[in-house]
Image (cartoon, rainbow, N blue to C red; front, side):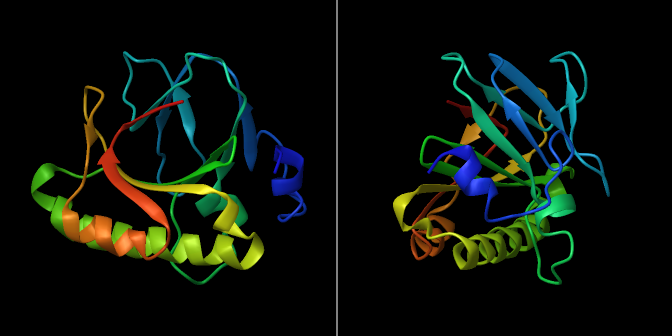
Length: 167
């Protein structure tokens, strides 16, 4: 499925607001509460780093404030698509002591989003990745605990925590 075929499932999306095509080698994303993403430099405050060293074209979808904006269900912040890989990302900007509570909410948001996308697109032909992103001053990849990994396997999704994705 190419970008156009995927986007056809979500009519009336405005380019550069609801979605962006990313092709640069690196991006630093900041989640802005009640707004769309802001792209930052590494020196600035950021929540997620996307490293694209092979300069692939990546489809970045503003999920919470565009695609699922009118849905009453929980929803994750961003969805990223690249060559049959789909990433559901929930960014949480909280102090480490509040992360357990936020993890539970993030899991619900990710699962609800996977269900929504599965109702629009047959996700069986995709490799699915679900990630909770906690802000950090450095690039962090954490596997996530076993119970959450098992839970997400029920949705044919890999699960991790971290603030870094490499394509």
